[in-house]
Image (cartoon, rainbow, N blue to C red):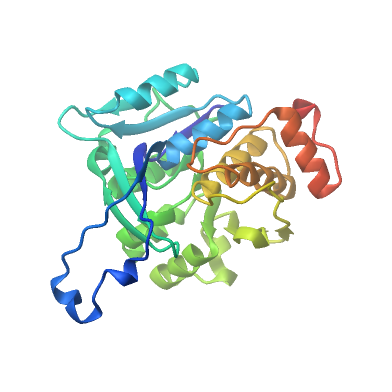
Length: 317
């Protein structure tokens, strides 16, 4: 089984404003807003859902296949993927576009102003899933990306009986209710956080009691409260693994999905998959950025045992 990771690859520009936005925005002038914030600190990080998932899988000594589109400025990202020995064979470079970019400014109250340029990501449908990429035994994750690509990827997997995880994330608002429902229909897993699950229900009218008419499993992540893994006959509440420190929750969801994929590939039962995913997420929160955390397999195994009181299998010994 190969793990096929579809989704975005992006550059994240993170800036910190050493003051409070509210001191510089005049409420009575909001209709004619014209402000500039001087920032001393600027970080440029590599991100995007597909890149983040593949990065954490690589820490677990698991190679994966990234499928996506990037722009003419991809060189820096490409160098890192090469250094990690991650395949670039199914990443399509669109010479007339920029790679997706996110610009985030955070103030001293942890308020954020974010601008996102989709760039090449919005053309992700130009890189199709086909038999040259995916075999019937593979497992595909469809993570936030261009909407047309996500719809087409789900349709391809359904038509060819390929198991897939549908992870709509921050792309949910861009879907119509019918489009979202079609992507969920036939998925092996629907993975969302609690806020996203409410949005899915509001858009599709899929209620908790009938969601298993559409997907075999529903996973709802709950932040520090852990996660809820549900199927038609069972539900498991998984305790969150405790990090050494909490610095930045950005990318924790992607690390969770990496752990989930890792355990599913090894045929683990759903409860154990949730535990592995939770431990994986706990390492991501310990560092700023989405691809700066590190762990050894021994570190991972020790945290798993500390959290759940049981040993992982031989592949983490």
